View 1: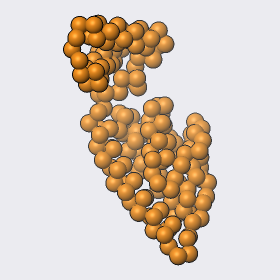
View 2: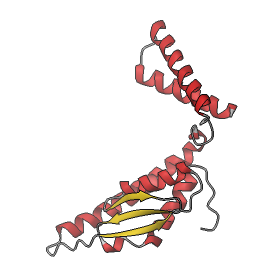
View 3: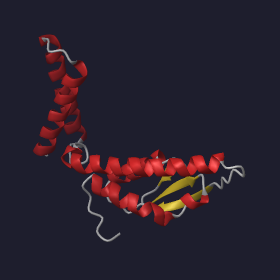
Length: 163
């Protein structure tokens, strides 16, 4: 827990200094007070853990975002192709996509990644699956989301094993 608190404090200090850009004593004192208040709230709510301060997995998360960007571009081209085709072959479908991630942050990353991908929207999240609306029927195969699920879990430090 001490490690998570330290990581959170360092992240908050960096964010405060980056966003304010001023180094006047009054603003620095207000920054320290704000950071202490956030830290107090995290301790009080008992949410100061690896999920709250997940900055230890930053390199993994950044590499996941690069992979996700490529997937977003691919899906964007497929949606544009379908919408601009003369026959407008849009075939919406709602499917259940398995969500075997163990932590809430991994499930949230997975659901948000689905929603960020053009043509798909996470409609509802249950404990073991996500209800997804797909614009095109070829985007609605639950198996196609498996790699994204494994990669999103890996990005936040969760080991999915042989899922």
